[in-house]
Image (cartoon, rainbow, N blue to C red; front, side, top):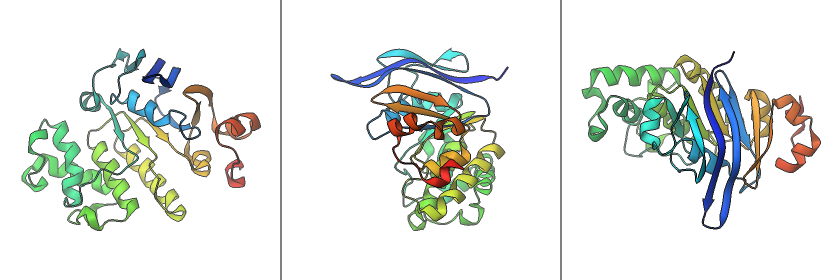
Length: 257
């Protein structure tokens, strides 16, 4: 039997009178790459924020490793093994790649209050940073200021910092947004290979690029107006015209295989 890592159970989230999520339920099991799709305003980012502890659900529950984590908060949840990266890259321009990746390593070691000290001061964290950087193909960029990185490299550094927490599950909000079409496959392949190398067991990603979803996802979860309207393998998803029309409209021919 496949191990369940995360369960959203009847998750509802409201902003005043507006219901952003309405009774959303699904499981994430070990070994999955789950793509969350839907039109703008469907509740995708709200879902990720709620699953990762940034938002507290108004109703329902979030179960991680068999225990409720509702209300735990993103920092504590990340240290338990559920991490996330954001749609907007959160690297600090004045930090080097080494210092930025070290943020997660320091947090994991309980050194959060000393984040601004050079990563090289800490031998254990320095070794951790170098291992993670190598997994992302960034070993040669450790002394490079983040301000001089390409958008794709900034995305990788941001995700690499999250992976120094050694999560079992990582939630990614649009990991390829702002990246040229020519670079998207390279970013995804680097990300998935690094995640496997570093022990990440499952990934959940909000993604708009249907070709990437067809190529890399093992399952597609679809939201519309805050409700779950699809949960199926990619091949079934892309061959269901009603679901496609409801969630994404026209799909590139290449996504259909």
